[in-house]
Image (cartoon, rainbow, N blue to C red; front, side):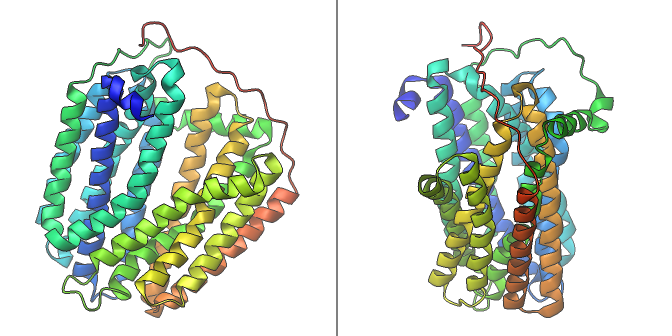
Length: 428
């Protein structure tokens, strides 16, 4: 895979932009968490503050995906990526003006705008990747991109926490803005073919009415796979866990920090989540297999691992054992994600995969946002991180039982053969 980076300048630029951009995203996330902990640490609504932050990171991708996809198929993908990077660089500079609790509304607005711009970058990058490699190199290109995402999730969070702790949030935001500019510079020198002309017109009415999402749901209903699509929506109870990780940096580990939140501890907790996410699908896939029955077991274990891991997190106090509990919990979450995706992808026609994914993703984002906010409100009501963790763990366990009952009472259709088409002429 590294050979692909060395011999292919177009893919190399795309890959380097991914590294720089995604690392900047994590630096921004850690800085925002520390800033919210600092400004809202003495507030009775600290949990709600973190819940809103999570929701604003989830909702824009779900809502704007139906717009970004058609645009990435109609205008220059390089232009979309470069424009997104430069817009995000300007947006991130706005965080420098947030320095008191009354300005948290500005922080939330900037988070929403940043994530909205990121939608166009991510979709354009995914669509552009096949244009940078040959068909024989496509698997390696996707594998390297996925591995890069996983490494940044695990390592980037830890390094970002360390950098925020050493440099402070203001310097972190400046570095984040610079990372987007560097990413744009990598992309400006990359040559990409123009998207193929599409016969159907671009209709705003279809975007506003979520026509493609409804078509995707109708296709899934015809196939009888709607129960599978609800898996990630039921998993949305785990949105509470992400709010808990943010809270832990302030409540459990931030009491001795002048910032009100321990950036190092927060980064370590999110890094443990990333490492668990990295290992989970590989480990459970090898132990249980990849057939439909094995995938269903992985999903059920995903709910169980998360509930048990975070229940243990409620009893821990030191950072090491807290990270071990979080890492164990997220072994299951990532396996659940992969297994449920494979179950429906084996059955959905290629022409509907994007729309079915968009429908599934929308349900997951809304569920994560709602349960994350509820977890924050529960903490504000109880002022106990342990009670909040145990309540969310119990909820996730119950939702896992709901999924198990649903799986026992529904039958999946047989998988359909996978058809792989050659890329259009002139794209390489």
